[in-house]
Image 1 (spheres, rainbow, N blue to C red):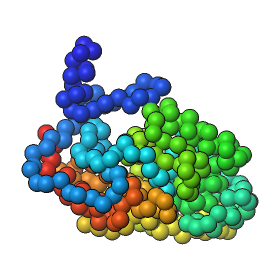
Image 2: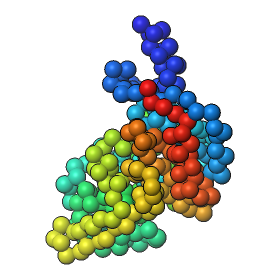
Image 3: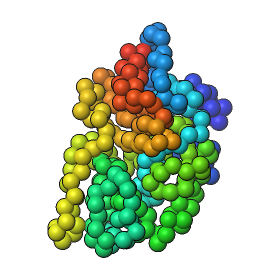
Image 4: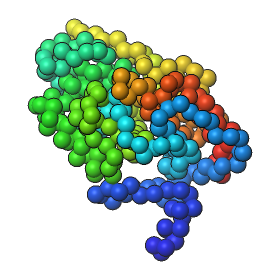
Length: 288
């Protein structure tokens, strides 16, 4: 039976992550269709230093270039921040904003010191706006200090099998020891995307969040320009710093209704390259 399972995994290019806990993959009966390469057009030559495209449902690799390279990932970091928070806190919990979180620049929603706002709205501001102050506020709320929270991030990464990843802060600011790989980020993004609030929020181009007393209001505008494109886009996360360049994790649905996930690190034009890669996938793969 084990031999049969291994043969099935090899056939469909699936693999178990090297995690401490048991891997969870969809059983064959639960998978609606497998992506098979049927086209013959030349692979696109992307400018990103690292890129990866997978079938979101099965994890099958559809395209990769240097996907195991360890590179800065900017605000893609916040997916781990979200995962740690959402696995350990209720959305209805009320956060008293730590004054330290309000001092960060840039990409913020201008939270006020001791403003009270729910975990739900802070999460939404991270997914839509990539708000640094919201990410710091949640980290301080969870752990009291950033070092303790970052330890939780790194521990969770090891549990997921993200062995090419290291976190030094919950935002994604450049640091020599803050890096990941497209392969690892695929593991993280697939995990985070299963959480309903992330799915429901990642499709929004605009939103508004408020303090629990409604005295403070924060308008959010998405950083994901793909949401306004011709593609059917379901998220997920952008990131940019000097060292990381333009980074992007995009979830796009094919004309046949199957979702792919594209990951790009240090792209010269992340949104254009995501369009190019998505179209190549749709032209050259069929789900059968």
